[in-house]
Amino acid sequence: QQPVQSPQAVILREGEDAVINCSSSKALYSVHWYRQKHGEAPVFLMILLKGGEQKGHDKISASFNEKKQQSSLYLTASQLSYSGTYFCRDDKIIFGKGTRLHILP
Amino acid sequence: NAGVTQTPKFRILKIGQSMTLQCTQDMNHNYMYWYRQDPGMGLKLIYYSVGAGITDKGEVPNGYNVSRSTTEDFPLRLELAAPSQTSVYFCASSPGIQETQYFGPGTRLLVL
Image (cartoon, each protein chain N blue to C red):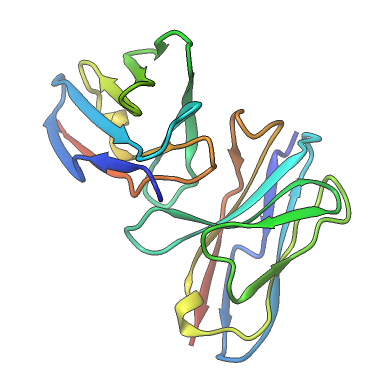
């Protein structure tokens, strides 16, 4: 079964914060996050490993709760360039359905 | 480094025709993958390979075949094209299964 992402879509104004969640029905060793802009290929953001630290990427960070089999992606002070679809991926190389993020100026 | 390259960029097939989608990586990665992405949807794993000569099925392998004779190349074969195979196909590679996947630019396939 594929990871479940929520919400399905988010609309923000520039400067606002967002949280995207990813959960699995199976035990996870790792969670990967990717971003895809319209008409382009997915691009890697970060990997969170079991027992590892919270990762950060500019104003984008993520956490991984192994016991709850969940990961969350935090986008702080969102920029127009953050628009796109965010995917989480489990350690079985299966992707979630994605969360569409649209940033308004 | 070119990274992951895919050819062709776009193709129109008639129902029942066959074709091969090419994928090449120059990063000496052991792992290679094929995904399909339908409009507005997520990525579905078709096949993957852990090294030359070794392939395994993903979530949606029916209607496709793969081979991996070299580290660099991982072609995807469609034998009898069907309208349900209209999609964007992405190839990706990674050094290991828990490491960053690098995606190619994709092949847009339309089956009519």
